[in-house]
Length: 420
Image 1 (cartoon, one colour):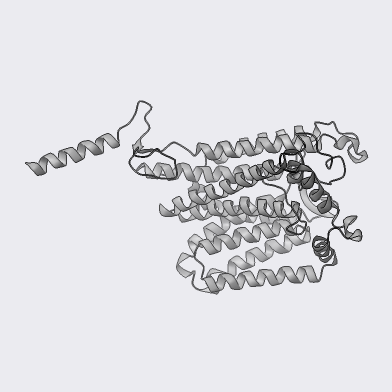
Image 2 (cartoon, helix red, strand yellow):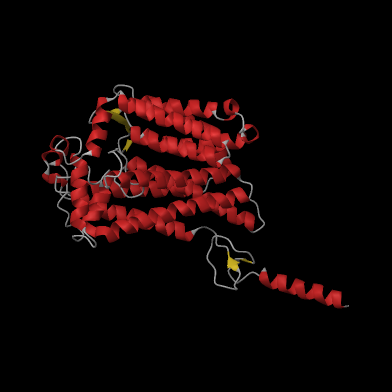
């Protein structure tokens, strides 16, 4: 009799915990990444709303700062035919395209992305080859990195970042049983990375190659590749970078300029951007000179709206603004890794490794861009994800994050007891 009463009371409690409210959402008696008050069941929502709002807020800040950094550019004879709102308008169009592409991407099941991951990587390789073909790729300042598409110039290296994240995640999932064998598990991936590297260095775009290498190596490491093999590959990559710097006078001069930017021959040459970036941060102090009050953007700091947008943020919004951007990227990267770990816990290896690969992309590229702006790293032509001006970069950022959002949605569906 007592046993029957106990079972009934337990059943009643479970039924209460799993009750549906008027809106049809479920109160699940477990804790996950969604915050909850002490002693209360965690309510799993349909998607990670905080992630969406943080990304939108970062793009909104980027839109504001791109306008501020580019508003004076028509005073330059090179851009004399442009309106003061030229770059603002183009950036708005890029964000609109990115959000539309993201809305489409989030509708596609992760299983479909997994199925076509190798083909997406192949498409990226074909476009990287196409950009090097005369009269097909567009060259700017001695670099051939863009394909003119009329409404925008598309940069295949941005698609290659998404492609390598998907291909590496798919590859590691398929090679889980041989990951302890170097030639079976790592060699094919190393060859793929080498091909991408050769194509990117031919543009040249060493910055993009560094990010792609970081994504691929990070996914290999997270996928469980033997530690000794991993460090061997890292050593080979470091050796390759050293050789490229040694045999390239242009890159060697950049390193010397980075080490001593205030020397006269470098301050007016290879270190010109770096010195003016540091001046911008110095002028910003703690709370900045005020929005729109940057002097360095007035034709002193080249590429202020792209590679050196953080310097304008530092000058106008000060340390407080820069710290806010750093915290936002730290939170974003951590969130993406959290979603990836949740997917792996649910035995969704491809989804988990891909999400963590995107976390490496966002955090790693932001780290390099910030390091360059602050003089902690040699100058590289890399934009600040989600913030800097650049149509293809914004487009691929939105698509890659939309796929992670889809992973999060399917994680929540599985946790409810449904199917992804």
